[in-house]
Image (tube, rainbow, N blue to C red):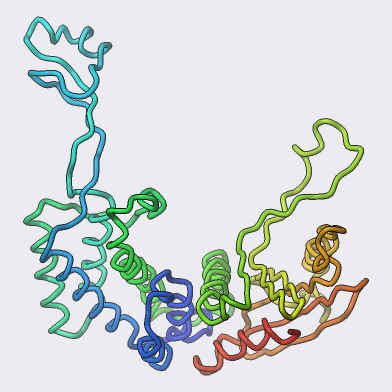
Length: 355
């Protein structure tokens, strides 16, 4: 059975999924060591933690939420739907159509948690864990909770009553994510990740950000992702902002003690042009724009900020840099085919190499 995705070992893909997951920051030191030392065991370990978390939650009660409903009732509840009540002549029948919020445990979040059990059942080989997952699905069915593979945690972000579910949601998200590469097991190895380029780039970006958030000392490092840069336009026409291209950075690392700022842009292409062994011009221009366009007199670090283009590669290691107009530009790769324990060390070393 083939164990690679585009020549990248499945266990290393799983390792990236772990780093990208919100669950990674919830692990204690010993658990991190277990996962990182045995990435091929991530699925079973995630299943163990999922079952324990669900059992604990079910011993008390699942969190509930309000869902909007529009029904024909014999009494007023919530707000009256006047249009449909009049159109259907409901008042003459002693009925009224109403909008109201219904308190229920069959929420999108609980459906998402329920669905994770079926992902596990489709992929686990451990009979003990399979039995545990079956019991969990039976409990959810008895509570009349459906299934959904889609859930947006931002919806519940500010709901304090749901904070206790954060860990369980993170584990469920990791399980849903881990199911993606295993679908490719058994296929022939491909030379390029053409079908999954977008997916891999997003995964690689989130893994780099997650790794930094957990492993860099928050007392020394400020970590920012998805920051929108603005062009320092002057004497512009009225509609110029409508047409200027958007600049959104993948990652910014800042260490004020070391007087250091690094702007990182992750890519999922070859580091070189197809036609020659030179860096891709568009990528270089983009990085140059990131560091030069942000220079401001009231921001001293902006005049010495470094930039980095970071590429995932297979069996190739590049780490070059140059100084252009006061800004160091780095062109670096991470070999995703190397031993999984080296991936983390290499990545952290690259990101902090100039401090």
